[in-house]
Amino acid sequence: MNRLGRDAIAARVARDIPEGAYVNLGIGLPTRVADFLPADKEIVLHSENGLLGMGPAPAPGEEDPDLINAGKQPVTLLAGGCYFHHADSFAMMRSGRLDVCVLGAFQVSAHGDLANWSTGAPDAIPAVGGAMDLAIGARQVFVMMELLTRDGASKLVAECSYPLTGLRCVSRVYTDLGVFAVGAQGARVIETVDGVSLDALRRLTGLPLDWAATNGENAA
Image (cartoon, rainbow, N blue to C red):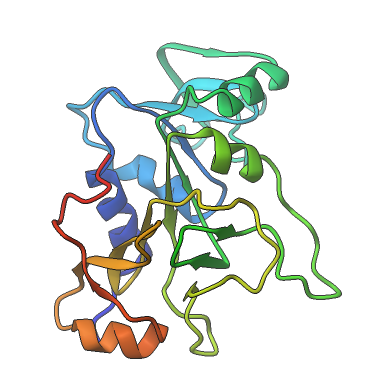
């Protein structure tokens, strides 16, 4: 079965981010989206530790230890960018100023519930960060994840079994096997990777999937 690599998933997410959007990229896999944003679009990247107008990673040897993203990776600041207090950053996140946030997940439910901060295991280290604020505050939440766990279980589920980050907050899920819309109508398939059928996705997820009404459903 064909699968997209992580960079290909990131590139697919980047295609759906509109010009002029203010966007937060979550720690880990979502940070790769920045590498695929088209140069001819003005898209303003936000980091929850207090950056707006964040640029790409610096060239080797040009890192500034005081200029990092929320994942502690060195970044640059574009012309017109700024940095500010952590509290101001969270105020932006909570008040609906961000158009899109892109997050990773352990599970997403067919109705858009998000679980991405703990598996609930006894030895799990809680790591919610600003995910709860982003999940509820951003106008749209996109999730990037591989569809299956290492054990072959689907991360797109009828109901989340892990502790929730947010309720009914996710609008789209981008995976290595396809793109899904989630929400009040349940999970629908927007597109599949070449060679992956709708029936195959139904078997893998155990969900009664159908095609989204149009490929533009829940578009940014």
